[in-house]
Image (cartoon, rainbow, N blue to C red):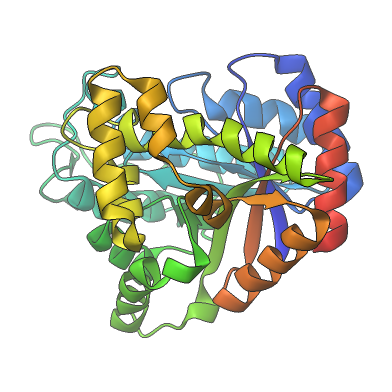
Length: 341
């Protein structure tokens, strides 16, 4: 398996840069930069492109609706050039809380917007005059405007990854994307994802080997049962937030993903408690099995075995979120994990 991580620059910017630089020295293959509701990804990626030499860089993710498709293409072409061809474009629909609540852009029809966005971006990548008439976008608008092409050099080889969770968007990922940035993943429940991903691949006449399946999980090492119990306990609040607090009151794609993987009852209860303000009660409902199934937490032997399961399930790239209170601690955790892969 290849290796990757995801960082964001919302806080401790200098420490984050140092982490990426040291991760490159440790041999990490790729670094994705998130936006969420924090700092923007392209600015940080441009800086990292100048400070790194080998590591692959990607937007993980640019959210639909926060920029026009052509603005996304412009950023991608610029970053690919600055990095010497090391850039990959990660896109995702995000959710209504961020897209509508923060950016004031309608979240409606994410499937249509995703498909049309990629079609427009690939026109721009190919150096074509950009002309598109769809359900979500029309370029150019009617009137005096005429189709234009970007003045930058074409680069049709920039890979496009999708961060998707819902069945229809997973199918679209298999149909048109070069990679899948997955999350909330349990190897034992992988069919909840792969059934739809493979349907899209088949529709396009492709196979699983034609797409980079990149899954992420927190990695942390425990030297004994007490440490393991503490690590698992601390992760329960974070998982409860994903199940109950991510998204809006009516839409939570993370909750839906866990539900499809066999935890529908627990996920529903956690969400209900969280939305009612009982955060501790929500965390108490999260089981040890849920934490261990969706992370790479455990003794060194446990983590090694889980990585074997991930590899056997069909994961091409493992995206590691190393635990640690300090930069040195995170790098130590990352280094231990890389030795096991």
